[in-house]
Amino acid sequence: MGVNVLIVGTGAREHALTWKVLQSPLSRAVFCAPGNAATGAIAVNVPVPTTDVDGIARLAHEREIDLTIVGPEGAVAAGVVDRLTSVGRLALGPTAAAGRIESSKVFAKTLMQKVGVPTPAFAVFTEASAAKAYVQKQGRPFVVKADGLAKGKGSIVPDDIPETLEAIDTFMLSRAVGAAADQVLLEERVEGREVSLLALVDGERVIPMVPACDYKRALDDDRGPNTGGMGGYSPPGFFTDDDVRAAVATVFQPVVDELRARGTPYRGCLYAGLIQRPTGVEVLEFNARFGDPETQVILPRLSGDVLPAFQAAAAGNLSPESLSWSDRVSVGVVLASRGYPGHYQTGHPVEGLSRLEPDVFAFHGGTVAAPDGYRTAGGRVLTLVALGDTLADARDRVYRSAQRVSFEGMSYRRDIAQREITASVAS
Image 1 (cartoon, rainbow, N blue to C red):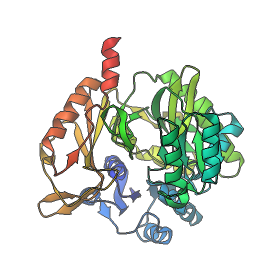
Image 2 (cartoon, one colour):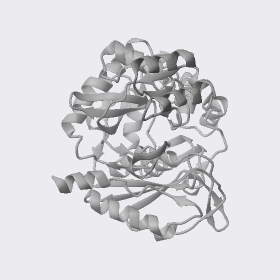
Image 3 (cartoon, rainbow, N blue to C red):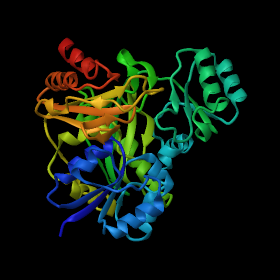
Image 4 (spheres, helix red, strand yellow):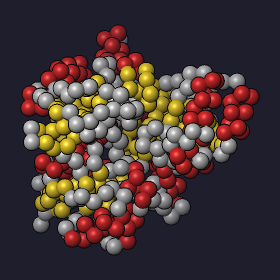
């Protein structure tokens, strides 16, 4: 008997998950709720919103779903996993309580403090006047973070004190992200190299994936506003296997042990946004889900069948050999609508997807099907990912393919992975 899989979400991350699960000889049928135009071409889309807990539970029952994979943080916070597990359905993702490690930055920070996980110093405020007074007294800028979920727009990195005060007003007075900023954190600015490390967790055991680096700013040279991610690559040469093992021991395992001790065991993919400093790694954030765009650059490097590992994590019986990885490397570039993450236009035809080079994959994040192919329907339209024997090879391949794709207003960063290649040449 095969496995019926339901993937909850709408973006390029979910397209990549669907693509990878379909490669498993164990998969019988794959459904997406609600999915997107590209998942609908390879799986079965069902028009159930990601936060419709009742609808997803009903769908899992009607389609005899054996494993549900939860993509977006909103579905975690809404309690999709809680409902599914309450009726005996296997789900890869944390409960809403365990997912607070992403849905509340204050919760995550205090948890890390309790178990000794290194993280930049912070202060929490519920009033804009108090937060601004603190900045003035300290006499330096801070990273300003909304406590709650803000769709990738809950963090501002100011360069000076006036920008810090403006960021506080943006969150707490202008209410740019609504109730997510009922509490605001002011976090110490720290310097170092950032890296994303994702791991499968079964409530007790932690199996790391390969590390990746993503690019959050909209423009080259890390300029412009923060976005949901404009690309990435894997692996970063500066983050070794020893670094991965150390992060599991000092970051992941203490947090997983504490959540289990509190009666809220974490099962699913746990994402740590790390910064590597001379004193070791520190945690900038946790996400209670697969990362985006990290998932798109990591999954093509995963060799073998992914479905048994996903099932084992959800069931609580992961083993160290659950994941194996190719030696090939990957580079991913997000093709976005002009103006993203601000105002942008949609509805433009997407051309050139049939002309991608070999070993280049197009994961759809914001498209709709049209008689002539696909049209744009979001800010991050596509993530192009190339595999290669070297980063330079993969980078050249993905950027050549990006030049073959076009839609009105298409924009993308042109410096993805360049710093890694430059550093390698210099050494």
